[in-house]
Amino acid sequence: MTAPRPAPLRIAQIAPLWASVPPSTYGGIELRLHWLIEELVGRGHDVTLYASGDSKTSAKLRPGCDVNLIEAMARGDAWTYEGYANANFEAALRESGSFDVIHSHTGCAHIPFGALSKAPVLHTLPTMLSMDERWLLERYPAVPVAAISGNQVSGIPAGRRRSIPVVHHGIHFGAYGLGEGKGGYLAYLGRMNRLKAPHDAIEAAGRAGMPIVLAGAPGDAGEQTYFDEIIRPRADGKAVTCAGPVNHAQKVELLKNAAALLFPIQWEEPFGLVMVEAMACGTPVLACNRGSVGEVVDWGATGFHAASWEGLPALLPQALALDRAAVRAHALGRFSHHRMVDRYLEIYRSLAGVTEAYAHSA
Image (tube, rainbow, N blue to C red; front, side, top):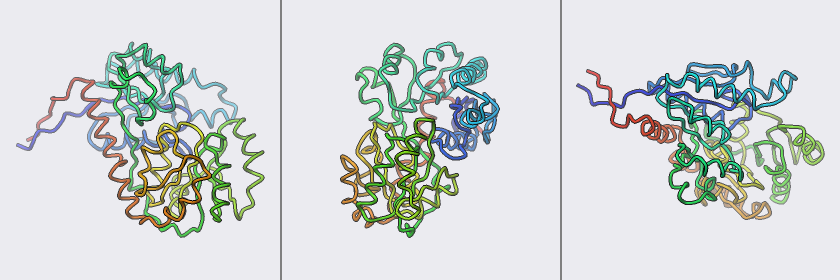
């Protein structure tokens, strides 16, 4: 007889419908969800994914719409998000008797509906919490919730906060190669908006005396206006280059060849997956210390942080002196998708009441 092993679970995953799983370009939630699902399936679990129909997954796919809503809206085939997202969540609830646990990545708005499920529903909080979302968490204190950083839930009263486990995002490090950073430029990767602050990344790079490559695109009309008025006029193809949206392969090459990643956020970012992606390429991170930055970037090991973007250029020599292989190794120890999946499986089994259930094989 071989040693007993935990029984496989029947798990539903509910994705946002903004991007496909995995995303073709931008989509941190969808990328992290992709690695979670592929590892769960690889470990023998029965996984069903409720997502856009253009998703590529090893799980059983239940399309909530034909294509992701970013593309559908760009073509004029959809106008609002909520109806599609609600229908996608309802489809999982309708089949909830077929699962041991349901894992929703759609945010707090669906917390009240989880009570209608025949299977326990875990809600991972995807972004910074508004006062309304904090109210929902207080109104439904028994609903299982997971945070993506300690900072994300730091403003929640201690009684509720103690019931919320923190599961840091993880990525598949095998999909990111170690780079030497010989491109001679700094990198920015993310949405083109004021809170992500690519304009401050440009200023920091200029003061550091290095060119910068900006990758990413506006996500809506307001961001497009910001990009057209603030960022595009600075792009001369030399000191400042706009690479536009990048796919996974292009993103990895950008990060591998960058001397450092600039992450000059001006909001309380709840995680910031791009920081881990940079580390996976051996690329150190220089970030403004807001949100989860101090939780993700280990000072002197994977990068440095400052109170504002003005403090980042002075930290660049220290960042460039870091051993890139050591940056990658340190990040792997903290943010591998294996670690993330292990933690979620602990939560799934606890919710499903099968912590001690085992399958035996001869």
